[in-house]
View 1 (tube, rainbow, N blue to C red):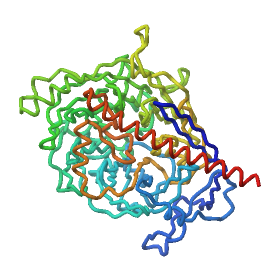
View 2 (cartoon, helix red, strand yellow):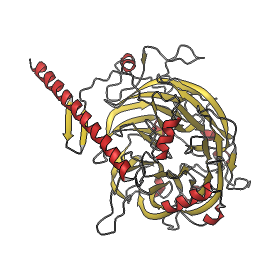
View 3 (cartoon, rainbow, N blue to C red):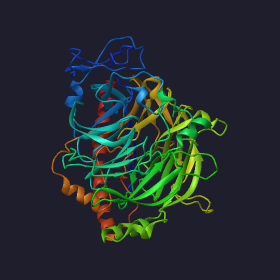
View 4 (tube, helix red, strand yellow):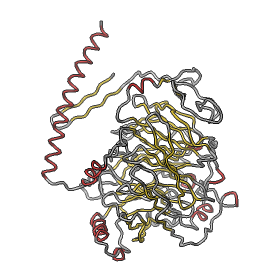
Length: 575
C-alpha cells in the first residue's frame, strides 16, 4: 500500500493508492449472451458461490473465478453497483447499431474500487419482454432503478425494478411512456413524479410515483409539441434514414420533425424544465407545475448554438454542480454550448407559480444566455463522421466530458473556476484538455464511479464496456486493463445500494431546505446537482466550519493510527 497524505491546519487531502492487487477472474465465452450463469434455459438464477467476468488484462484463457465471499464480508452501507442495458431489436430503432443484439437486455455488475474491476452479478430482461432499454435513472432516495425502451412504432415502456445488494432485480412496476422511442427519464424535485421524454414523436409525459417508488397510476399529464400532427419521417425499414449518420441528407430528414431528447429541471427552484429539441435546433423552456405534476406552458425557446446556419442538434442538457452555468451538447455540430443561468428570473417564476399567478407574463423571457461554444472533436476532423453522445459534468465541478461517436473518443474539458483578470474569461467556461480513445466503437454512454476516479464506457458497436482511471488533477484518462463483453451496451447507470428504504423523508426535507440534495452514490447525470451556489448566513457558515474542523481532527487521529500501523508492517516485512 502506497500512502500519500497531505495535511495542514485548515485543509486535509488524503489519497491512498493500492498497488499489486490480485484480480481473479474468468474468461467469458465469445458468444455475447452465453456468459449467463444459469441452471436451465427457462429460468435465470444467480450463481451462489461465484460470478463469471472477463479480465482483459490477462491472457483471457486461464479459468478462475472471483469469489463473492469477500464482498459479502465487506458489505457496508454504500455498495456501488452498475446497471447496464443493451439493445435487442435494431429494426425498432431510429438509428442503426452495428454490434450484436442482446438476448438479454439488463445486467448488474458490482464495482471494485481497488482495481476498477467489475463482476457480473445478475442478468435479466429477456429480449422479447424488455425491448431496447436505453436510458435508466436510479432513484435519489430508494433502491429503485427505472429504465425505458426505444421503439419508433409502438409506445415505449418504463420498467421499475427494486435492486438488491446482491444485484438481483425485482420488477415492481411497468407503465406506458405515452410516446415512441422513449429516450430520457427525470425524477422531479419532490420525487413525486417521473417525467419521460419520447424522442421519435417528441412528446413529454408525467407519471406519478408512490413514496416507495412504484408507479401510482398511468400518465397524468402529456405534452405534444406537434399538436396532434402526423410524423413526416418514416422508419429505416420503410425507407427512412439511419439516425446514426451525420451527412446532409440524413440531417434533413432528422429535422423535418421536432425530436425532444431530454428534460432537465432547474436545480434551484425545480419549476423550469429545459428540453433540447434536436429536430428544431432549439432549447425549449417550460414552466413545470410541480404542485400538480404537469408540463405547463412553453415560456421560451432559444437556439442551442451560435446560429451559424448549420444544424446543431441539441441532445443533452447538464447543470454545473456549483456555478450558475449549464451545458448543452449538440449532437450534429459536435459542439458544447455554455449558458449562464438567470437565477433572479427563475426565482420570479417560482414565486409567481407559488401565488398561482399567470405564467404568460414570462413568455419570451429566457433564463439562459449563451456565453461560449467549443468543438468536441479536433478542428481538422470531419464533423460529418461524428455525432456526440453523452455530456457529463464531473462531480468535482472541474471537468466536462463528452463522448464522440465516430471519432471514438472522450473529449475532456477543464472548467474555468474563476473569472479571468482580463475579463475575457468567465467562470464555468471550458478549455480543452484533450481527446482519449475509448478502446471501442460508438461510445454512446459512460459513467463515473462514486469516487470520480474511474470511468466506465459503453462502446455500443464493439459490444464492450471498458474501464478507465480518471486523473482528478489533470483530467486525463488511462485504460485500466478491464474490459467486458456486453452485446450492444447503450447505458451505464450508477446504483449505490445502501440502507435507504427506511422513512427518511424528514432528512430529505432538511436537505432540500438548504438546496442540497445528497443522494448516496448519485448518478451525476441527475437533474439535481449535489451543490449549488447559495448565500448562507454567517451563523450557518460558522456552524458548518465547526463541524468541518471536528471532522478534520478526527481524520488526523485516524491518519496517525494508520501511520503507526504502516510502520509496524514495514518493520515486520523487514524482519
